[in-house]
Amino acid sequence: MQTHTPSRTVALMIALVATATAPLAAQDSTDTGLSQAGYGRLNQDDLSFGMRTESLDIRFTILEESGLRLLNQDSYNSLHRLVQSKRAQIDSVAAAFGISTPGILMVRYFSLAEGTRFDAQLLTANINARFWTPLGIVPLSSSIHKDRLGRREQASGIYVFDEPLTPFVPMAFTYGTTTANAWNSSRVETLQRERARIQSRATARELPDND
Image (cartoon, rainbow, N blue to C red; front, side, top):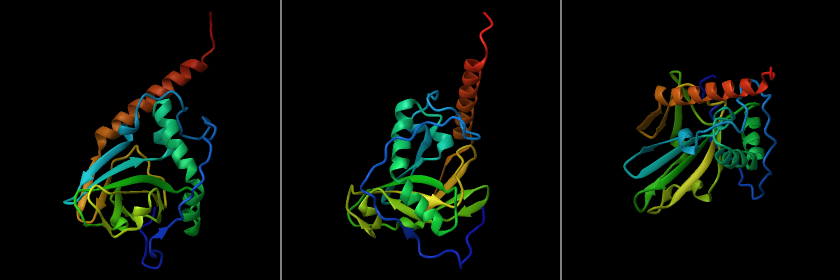
C-alpha cells in the first residue's frame, strides 16, 4: 500500500447512490484465506467500534469478507447483502484508481447538536504506521454529502480504500483531530480465536468416519 501522492490525491470521489439491491451471493468457502461461512459465532458488534468528537458520534463497521465470515449466519447475511447491493459502486470507485481489490469500511455519523459542521472527507486510517486516505465514498444516505447536520441527524457511507482493511491487524482511524484506537490487539485476538475455531470445526467435518 502506498501513501497517496499529491498527483494521485484528487478530490474525493463520491459514487452515485444505487436504488436497486442485489440478491445474496452464494457463499464461497474456497477463497484463499477465508473461513467457511456459516460456522461463525460473532455478531456485528464484534466488527464495530466507535469514537466521539465534540459534536459527533462516529460508528465504524469493518466489511471485509475475511471478517464477515466469522459472524453468525444472520449477521453475515445482513452485512454481506449490504456489500453486494453496493458492489457496482464500490468497484466503480476502485476502478477509477486502477484498484482491483479495494478495502471497504462502513462509517455512520450521528450528530449531537444542531448545525454540526461535518465533512466526510476528513476521515483517514492508520495501519502499520501508514496513513490511508480513502479513494471515495459510496453513500448509504444522502446526508453524507452535507457540510452541516441537524441535531440527531445521521450520515452514512461505505469508504473505499486502495487495499483490503484486514481485520487481523490493529487499526486506528482519525476524523479531524480525533483518533480512535479501538481496533486494538484485543479485538484482533478475538477474531483470530474465532477463525481458528472455525477452521478446526471445518477440518473435523472433513475427516473420514473410521467407524
